[in-house]
Figure 1 (cartoon, rainbow, N blue to C red):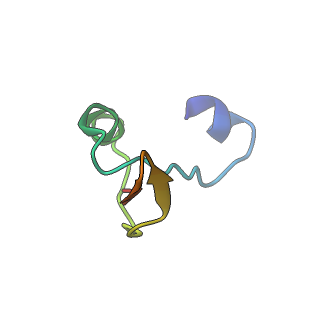
Figure 2 (cartoon, rainbow, N blue to C red):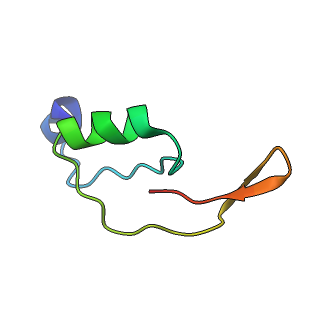
Length: 52
């Protein structure tokens, strides 16, 4: 994130599967904000997944 700021980026966007608790914890540890939780946007192994 520091490199993004140093190169002039203001926002970074990530979509994390809501079941991926390790990635959600990493984003939280990096002080990322959850701004929206789209539902049923990914389809994998025959089922729809939400993202955080």
